[in-house]
Image (cartoon, rainbow, N blue to C red; front, side):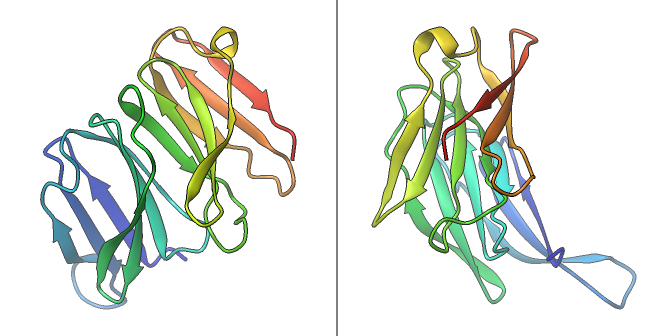
Length: 165
């Protein structure tokens, strides 16, 4: 809803800003969390419901955070990955009111996660389909009902993957 701005940092901190309608600054810092992860935070993505966001980190974790008022709290953490989580994106549509996630790793793996009483991996690319290096960015196709993920990697390639609904 364009009311919040989130910044994540190599120093493992996260800052949440709220849009101001008046005053000299367009955004006001409302919450800061030091050491939200154990290592560098590489990526973040807002959920389409606007009250959740996701972070991916070098510490091999992906965390879902919930915004409540002028603060955020940890909502859930996905199972630890085998390598650094380097990219994350929330699908433009929710599944049962919760974000659907695409996660990319340092090993070139891409997986899809849905929440059904706890997040579980619902799709993962086979090794021969993966990028040959680290995944730098993943992004869902914004067209409703189209299950495609674009991924860019350290190998300088961009690939588009189609998933079964």
